[in-house]
Length: 242
Image (tube, rainbow, N blue to C red; front, side, top):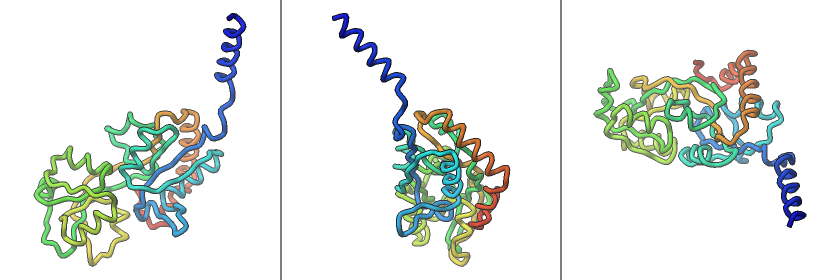
């Protein structure tokens, strides 16, 4: 009995102090297609304003990672619930602050309400906008924001492209989107109506991600900002600067 107990104690200590396997430090990144921020090539690879920064940060810190593109609601749910998962780029709202560990800012964004150019919509305040039907994406921070602001007519779609199609078809009246995304749309088709909010965006990670890794990534992001690399990436995609 004593010998078995001693063996179990030694085994417990061996497991406790054994080095983690390399796979344990691997990050699983999730995101959605959201031009010009996130783009997916024909071969499935991800590029864009956000991932171009993250790729530098991850590779220069020696961090192993995988990237997957999926609907936003699933992407952010995985980061909230699954070990070593992160989602980008996520609006850093007060409601989300304590749900994740953060590396930011990847961007500071102005989110606007957009309408069809031919639509007879004149809005001088957010209160005026509440009489119109507004579409957004499930799980996007604007879904919760519109609810908090008291917008009564909110149509929720699976992703950005579905919501944009609804706007173009006249099935919704307004749609929130980033200023930079709006700049990529045909000027003769859509028009800016009013500013909805300004928001900082970042990499939002599951609480299981080690603090030391978060600190390394944050330090490298701070370096990209300080040496002008982040701004050069913004300029490459004609992004509206903060």
